[in-house]
Amino acid sequence: MEIKILFDNAAADKKFSTGWGLSYLIDGDILFDTGDKPKPLLKNIKNAGVNISDIKRVVISHDHWDHTGGLWALLKENPKLKVYGCPDFSKSFKKKVKAAGCELIENDSFGEIRKNIYTTGSMAGKYLGLYLPEQSLVLKTPKGLTVLTGCAHPGIINIIEKVRENIAGNIYLAFGGFHLGNSFKKTIAKILEKFKELKIEKAAPSHCSGQKAMDMFKEEYGEDFIEIKVGDTIEI
Image (tube, rainbow, N blue to C red):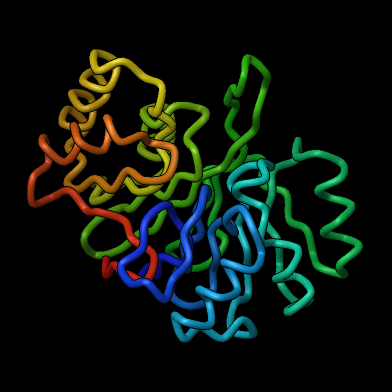
C-alpha cells in the first residue's frame, strides 16, 4: 500500500501548501481527513497528480474544522464520494454531507471498509473537557498493521490497544496526530515506553503531536522515525 501526504504542517517542496490539520490518501482512493481549508488541499491534490474522481471514500476522524475544512469542496468536485463518520458527529456535519448528495456511513464499531483497510469505529475522546468521538484507520499489509490517527483524542495508546484487540498482527507503524502538544516530557516518555512495550516498529507523529513529542520520538526511534511532509509518499 502507499500513503500520499496531501496536507500537514510541513512540506517536502515549495509547490505544496501547509497548514493546521492533515489529509492522507491511501492507495489512491481512500482519503483520511481533509485538512483545515479547501484551497490548499485542492492545490496539493492537483500538484500531487491526484485525480479527485479516483477518490471513492473519505474517512473523517473527528468533526473538527482542521479535519473537515476541505471536505465540502471535495464533495462539490465529486458528489459520488462515500463519507465515513461517527454516529455522534454533529447534526450540521451530517446535514451538509447529505445536502451534497453523498452517502454518509456512520461507524460505531471496528470493521473493514475495503479489503485490508479497517476503521476502529467511534471511540470516546475528550477535547476541552467535553466528549469527542473519533475514529482511526488500520491498514493491514505484509509488513504488519499501520494505524492512522487524526488527533488521537481517545489516547494514542488506547487506540492501538483497541486495534490489537480486534485484529491480529504486529504494529508496523503508528502514524498521524498523537495530540501531545501540551504534554509534559514525563507523559511523552511513558507513551514512548508503552510504544516499545507494544513493539511498534516505526513511528510518524505529526500535526498536533507537538515538536517536543516529535523530537523525543525521533531520538528514541532513530532510523525508524518517519518525518511527515506534504508531497511525500510512504510505501508500506
